[in-house]
Length: 313
Image (cartoon, rainbow, N blue to C red; front, top):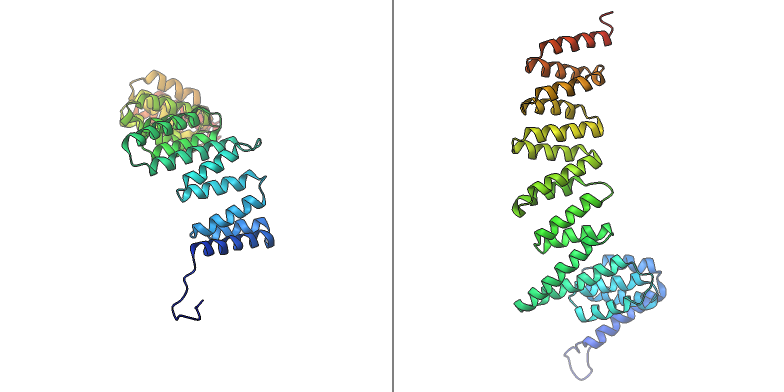
């Protein structure tokens, strides 16, 4: 726009710009369905001012939907606007049916934003203690999604004891132990002087899930420590839990290595019949007998194999 009395352009004011953006948002609310607006927000994330206009328009157009206010709160925090976020957070508490986990997380995120905005060391330390307390609440809750959030946030904030606690909760209380959680726990444990506890937790996870990936993690740890009795124990546990042939052979081998030949022999005798029609595993059983001086047992089992294959009458 140009003035009639001057060749210089008239610069639009911030107020006028805001009104234009607000009008755009209002028109979107009027003429576009809610789903279309939300789709527009996803494509406009690089323009935070416009995104806020969209979200405010949606929240005021559909004020009884708490998800709209949660999205607006999240956007305000992404822009570091803690005062506006605090006001929205206070309003959200009036919704009786709002998801408590979502509300708890947004309260944590508000606190975290203030933490990163604070420059004073004493205040930062104070907020850090509050963040740690909030993460402890997440871990002690019965909501599994909060355990994952606690793990991720404690990792970002470099709170290893809380990372360990969150992993422990996920492994012991989750529906199924995640091998990646077990691996992370085992990596973290030495620095915290909690390796023994981590191994016990990993073994519990193996007992519950029978997941071969957890077995391989445990076996690696036990072999590194040259604890062959422990290797035999977790191998036998894996075999009993899921019938894994390799774990069966490992259990017998590690019992021999742990100088427990009677236990190894008893294990082989108790399970060898299961592999009469598994030539590869059967041959390895024979080799284990021979390698440990049990030639008579190797001969006996070879005859059983021949009978099972009807080579001998």
